[in-house]
Structure formats: structure tokens, C-alpha cells
Image (cartoon, rainbow, N blue to C red):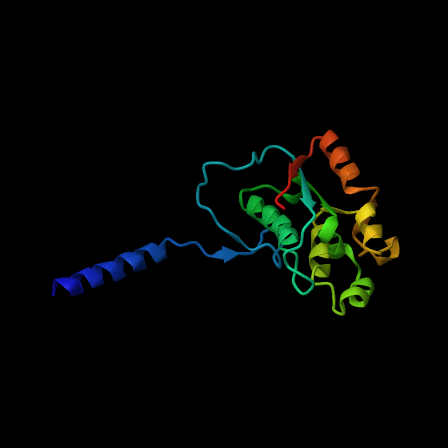
Length: 181
């Protein structure tokens, strides 16, 4: 009998814990990308009375050719999680520089299809990021070293002389570097 009481207590405890579990959701800035958890009353958030400049350095791609680059998804997650705390897209000036293995994410549909035999899984995300004001750049050195040309780039992507050039340029302008590669 005691054993059954312990099992019942364990089940109840597990059930109560699950009542407090958070579910991930989308938005409020990008509804179709960047699913995030709602964090009730976090102790640390960005100041929603200030503007923030953020520079994402993306030079890897764990998603492969068939999936969205998880690092590009993180840019959408960043926007959504901070949007949940009251920051507007206008308060988050975000720049993405793609280079190295991440350079392929910047390709238009035709070039991606030619190179990988499939549609670019990042195309819709790139367009969505641009729509909310994210500036997207590709490293010119990475682009040419991988056999791509400016005509191969997706519409929202701009060309930088190099990733190093973009990193120096935007950091000199006060952008905070996020490098999670």
C-alpha cells in the first residue's frame, strides 16, 4: 500500500510540474519563424527604453543543405523573445553577416537549385528578416571562394568586401557582436 502512495505522489508531483512548463510559440515580430518560450518575469532583459544594435556573425551551418540554418533561426528567435518584452523591431537594429559555410544561405533559388539540387530552405526566412528591418550581408571573399557570384545572391542580401570588413565596420558603429558559431 505504501508503494502505491509513493507512486501516486510521484505522478501528482510530475503533473504539477508540467502545469508550470512553458510552451514555445511564435511572434510577436516574426510569426512564422523563431519559436521562443515565454519567460514570466525574467530578472534580466534589454532596456525597452533604448535602441539596440546587434551584429550576428554566421559562419557555420549545422542545418545542411535541406534545412534552415539554425543560426539564422536564432536571429528570428532573438527578435521574437525581445519583442515579447516590449522591444519593437525599430528598437533592434540587427545586421547579419554570412560567411564560410554560412555563405550558401545567401543564395537565390536558381543558384541554390543549381548547386544543391533543391530549393534554398533559408529563402523565406531571409525575406522575413528583411521585412522587419534586418540587414543581411555576405562576405565577398567567401562568396567567390565557393564559386558564387553577385548574381547568385538572394534579393535581400548585400555584398561586403569581406566578413572582417563588416565586423569592423559595424562594431565601430557601436553594434554588439553575437558570435555563437
